[in-house]
Length: 233
Length: 242
Image (tube, rainbow over all chains, first blue to last red; front, side):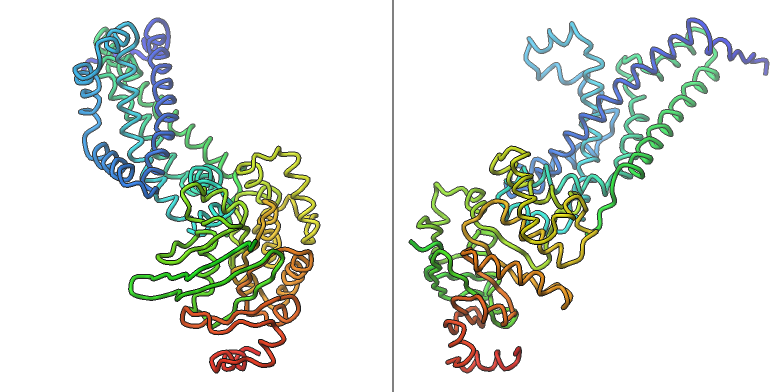
């Protein structure tokens, strides 16, 4: 084997800038998708708790469908398939904007939201039913009871699974390179194509993914430990 | 006009006829004590009044309005009817003060400062103003139940329902809750209390109702109820608990 390791190649200069650019895209698409999937997941979970049949069915179908189909297929669907059903002016608008990024974000958001909805639902189930009753009894609406009483308690309980869902999303975001989003993985692949130094490029990418995951996990755990009160019933 | 008027109330859980032909009229300022063995339907009865339980037959009028009328919003109805539960059911993630101001600020849209002033006044009235910034879990059962009473009062309800408010308390804490309830009764609050505290009934009730098997068996002013119960089942019940 006469492969010459050249770490400088990816740690300095133009290729290092590519890595940084890719990292920024990864962070951006992950952050946006995490926030959106939490929101969407919460809505889907609460739909399931209502007594309105269509909402319950929609929520159940949503989680089953998106949890049980491959993420890569979903990404391709949003990227290649959505233009067929979207109105022309939307397509035109998207063509002038970052369509790859949008399709990637939607795919990651919807996919992760299905998992998050199930976590939130289990969180809601672990709260005594009497909490909802006590909230409704003073005149709070269903939505108010969830926003001010039920969800704040549920979220405290499900922080650990939510961390793992967020970390999954960050790792899953590497798949959006397949539709041309220039994220960290995409850039590592580019460097490999240009330089044939795939080992260095993907090692750096791997270490960066690892660092992001560990950092996110650490921050949330510390927040949970120091700033969030444990609930005692 | 009666505050609460219940007519021919019937409720079934499947085949089980839990409430049978209940009629009751509660005037403003009246204090009713409802007692009876467990499973007699007394809790279910008072929970029908604020629609925490739905019923199949009969009607309940609150201040002259059918609580099931199309134009009655269930949330505004409940805002007018306070309820205190056996298990307190405080919101564990909020401080005592926030427990009390949540409904006034969200349902009544009372400004926060105003709601806090009222809350502190109410907490003083139930004797725990210096615990306002603690969390429910840091309080004793009796203190938690007094917070629950303050929380219900913060909506300035027309009626207060009490669903066995002292049954979950250690004996030494029962009186602190009963005293708050007695004060309320003396101040003219309309109250329906499901309780086994017969001392409380004797002291402040206008009428005592005995329920068994989903039926109202007997109803009388306390002195008559305790000294001269008419029905055999009431006599038996009183003998067992007194």
